[in-house]
Image 1 (cartoon, rainbow, N blue to C red):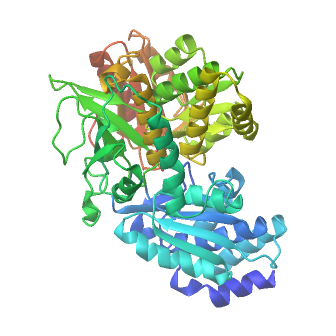
Image 2: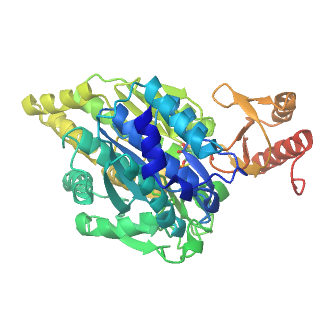
Image 3: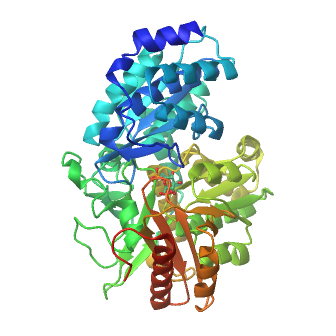
Length: 544
Ligand code: G16
């Protein structure tokens, strides 16, 4: 016990980071997220927690990312990353919450001592911590707080500076697998993903309707910065025109642009000229989500979101396995936000099983592991593919001995897809390479992709209140009675579906509605939003 108390009290500068005690923090679906001015003591404590986490894993590398992703620029946050590059284990999320809220220095000591006892953490292990941050101005100040915490435990640490969240996840997997997954640096990240993309691109001879030109909306964040670096590696296989790449004007981050804005508002990003049939690609503030969109000659807007990416990629992977002759079980994981028709398309047309889990990458990632190849995407554009180790091996072994030309080609393509995937977490860059590969292989324009099935019109809204949900968030159990009212409203709309759930990243309740027509989806969303407002005593103006 004594060693922890000594570390905290004598080496961590804890007196610089008191908890003012006027806010309550929760480690949720994406770490802790809050208005940045309240986060200094939280970051300092997370620095200490992440060091202990590494000691628990006998000095394996773990990660700490300073970002608030899609949130406005004045927010910030922290995401902790486990040893295989996956999200922090749920059991430690509670500890993070407890630590962030501990009222005084002595409580911080007691909590850390209890963790060390509970997990039998020995002081003999030197922690290894990888740190990254996004472009927010507050991120540098919060990094200093993290470093005091990390250094107090005499950690080996590497500060990667401004990087995307998925890069940090990737680096951790690389380090802990002794280079099997790549090297923990940006050069290795870009070459691994991009080289396999270029190899597969060379196999594609007829582009048909496909265009390699991309109008890239970087959300004025780290995604823009890193896409500029990627251009060198891409060798003009893609022609990327940069937009919303002003990372110095911090107010512009995610403001009326980026993946979350485009998806939530179902409109093109601002800050760039929008031309009919050009291909728009938007990422979010830490580049772990991606959304495609375009307008036609009548200015009608078309969204190709995470559901569309899921259907596109699932169909392609399924076809490749069929062509390869390997019998592999492929499954898709979605959330309640997934459009009803995307689920139908994958189940009925592609004949691939679909599972539904609560919002949060960790839930999707976990479920995807149930399949030989698990594909997961949230409708908001967050997702990736997971290949079981045995499947990866099988593909490579079979390729080495395959005599049949067609099968061999399919296997080679599968190897490239495995290598261009960042399997640790949703990654906008990796996902873009995969989408561009499939579109090119199919010879599709965005309209061709869009026409594979039609989305049920839907609407996403926000309100501020306290709610609890059940059944993968499809049913609201608190406030009592609200679900019955939602059910009766929904029953009036053909193909109607609606649910409400509290956001884990913003101080709002999200309201989702879909129905047979756009007008009905809007009306349904409004009716449900009004019911939410009335029954739970909403703040501000009643929805209109
Ligand atoms: C995070 C999570 C995602 C989730 C999103 C929105 O993404 O990683 O799984 O879909 O928040 O969550 P909510 O609806 O609870 O606000 P990101 O990209 O913001 O870190």
